Image (cartoon, rainbow, N blue to C red; front, side):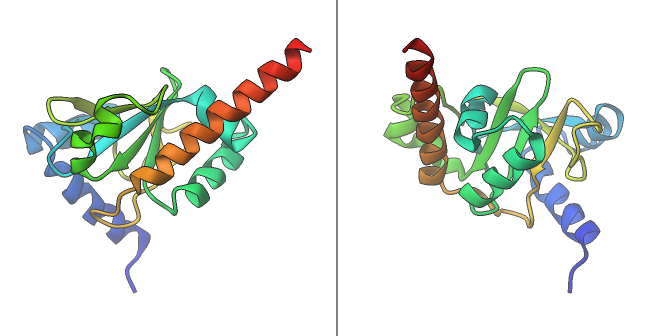
Length: 171
């Protein structure tokens, strides 16, 4: 059996493969809690506004939002930037090349692929008080990513729920 600490170490090594400078990225994690990593090589990320995620989850209570995301995205990794109020869902690198994400066919979600850099929290940052960004659904093992269609479904659900609330408030 592998401990959580061992899995976090393995995830950290895997994520660092996306760093332009591994030593610098380790230092950034140690000092600031986030490291600048390159998207499009080993992973891409889909950026979703907190309002959309919270609407899909039906709550703003963080523990309930986290549980919703974990279930809806089948345990795939997600982190949130508390300051910008954006969620980042890690998906396979190839997603950035898919027409549905390149054409922004999923409104309010943006795929960060080749040519993009992302401030990624250290693997053990799993609570809101720990840093500006934290893993609300931690990466369980190296290379384990979200299914893009599940991300699309979460976004569409959130957009639908928000529109329903707005329609109801207007009546």
